[in-house]
Image (cartoon, rainbow, N blue to C red; front, top):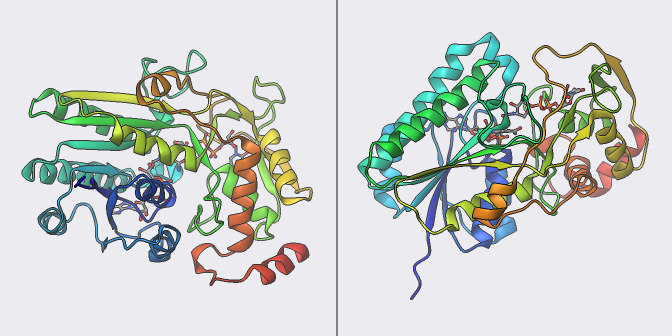
Length: 356
Ligand code: NAD
Ligand code: WQD
């Protein structure tokens, strides 16, 4: 009999975590989720259970809670961990840096200590393209110089360093940091997606909320960058492609004693105005916007060289921007209030969208 592999997913109720749990179950993994729901809803995991027709053990707890981690490792035979849990709002990290250092660093240290105690040595970590700061060369390869421009980014850099030191210390650790570029889109079912608790910081959820009538217009942060249309250029990657990369990272034959880093992007740059046009096509109407000043800390252009992930993980992004916008719109239009929207309500949403 083939033993199923079981992964612990921290932050599995969140945007990327919930999509990854779906792909893990489809790939034959059993999954346990721990999430303190500080930026997500229990409903996301219920919907994942429904999509996958699988029961998923869920612990509402902070990853810094050592007793809960011990209970999980004692109850389930876990052989790998994917660590999504973390605070991620750049602006908030500038206002309250200690909260970010305390939460993101402590949770990773507690997790590593408990993994070591239970001899679980395979970890995949959510890093970010933010660790490249303002890149000197494009597309960005994994060996580009690292720097961070805000406390959030510095927590990612520090954690990557912590992970590399842990592997170097011996003990057969097998750790992978995945540096995500700009995740967008939603699951095809329209039942899970990105559900910001406050005003969205990121471009795509903001556009989606304009499209559904929750916000008046998009503010385009700057049209005087050195880019083809003057607006910022980013590498937007479909969240389901991203989710599948985590499965690929876990499936890669274990290489004990190895610390690996991969860019997860598409290699294509898309401007703010191009993204707006793509979303207009997806939702079938034009969307109001206003050009305003640059957002402090923003860079002009950022896109990945994802070749290494293709060569070593056999992974490559396959969904394009049009598909990601169509999927994001399906999620947003069916769930205008995110997970607070009760299902099913497709007819009501069509009316709401038409009146917006
Ligand atoms: P998210 O906020 O939707 O998911 C993070 C989840 O972790 C949430 O469900 C939250 O409740 C939970 N959480 C936070 N701190 C916790 C703690 N101490 N204990 C337990 N649960 C905790 O964010 P996301 O977009 O899904 O991002 C997932 C990871 O990917 C984060 O680490 C983020 O920094 C990283 N990342 C995200 C992006 C992006 O643009 N979305 C880009 C690069 C990297
Ligand atoms: C994309 C483009 C904006 C909102 C951030 C974090 C990064 C990573 C991903 C976690 C830029 C423009 C945006 C709006 C706009 N997160 N924009 N109006 O800045 O590339 O990266 O999210 O790791 O760390 O910094 O993504 O979606 O915020 O912005 O014009 O209302 O859209 O100026 O050019 P960004 P974003």
